[in-house]
Length: 306
Image (cartoon, rainbow, N blue to C red; front, side, top):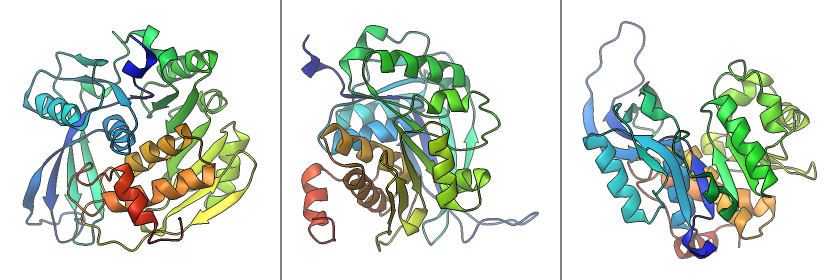
C-alpha cells in the first residue's frame, strides 16, 4: 500500500454513544425535572475529531475500542458512512462507552459519562507500523503513560502531536513531559482557569510548560490562540442558533488539524476551527452537522475570514 491508503490524521481515544435528553434547565440539588428524549447519537472525542478532519476532505482515522453491543455497531456504522478509517478500532469484551447529554433550550449541555474499560484507545493491538504513515497524531486525556509513549514515538517519526486536554491537571503528574512533545494543545475555559483564572496567563503558562501552540475554546465567545511565535489572538464566536454543543471542542480540534495539515497559519487554523465548531452546534448530536470543505469555504466568504 502507498501512504495514500493510510490516514493522514490518527486520533487516539474513545468511540461512544451520546444519549441526548432535553431539560428546561440544569437540575439543582434535590430537584426533579421532566426530560424529553432527543435521540441516540454517535460520539466520542477521538471519533468526533477524526470525523471533522474527514468531513473537510482529509483522511482521518481513529484508534479506539468498542464493545460487542448495539451502541458499538451504531458508532462503527456511522464512522464507515463518513469515510473515517476504522482499521485500528478494537472489538473488546466490555460495553461500549456512552454518555448522557443533558441539553437545555439555549443549546448548552452537561454530560454524565458512564465509564467502561472500552473508553480507552486501542493500546493493546494497535499496529505501530501505521504511525509513521500519518502526518498528525491526536490524543485525548486517556492513559498518561500511553500518550507520552505515543508522542515520543510520533516525534521520532517527525509527526505533529496534538493533545485535547481537559479536566484535572493533578491527575497527570507527567503533563509537562507530554506538553514538551505537544505541537498543538487544545483545552477549554474550565481547565485553563484551573491553572490561572486569567485565561491569557493560563495560555502562556501552558506554553511555558512546553506546548508549541495553545488554543483555548470559550464556547459561544469563540477561542483564544497563543501561537508558536508567541502571538496572541482572540477570535470571537459566531452568532448561531445552538441546539447542542456536545462535541464542539472535538470538532474544533479536528478542523484545526485539517488546516495545519494543509499548511495554513495557526491563526487561519483557529479561524477555520472556530467556524466549524460553531456550525456543529446547530444540530443535535456531536456529529450532527459537520460541514464539508466546500460548505465551510462558502460560509467563510460571509465572514471576515475570506
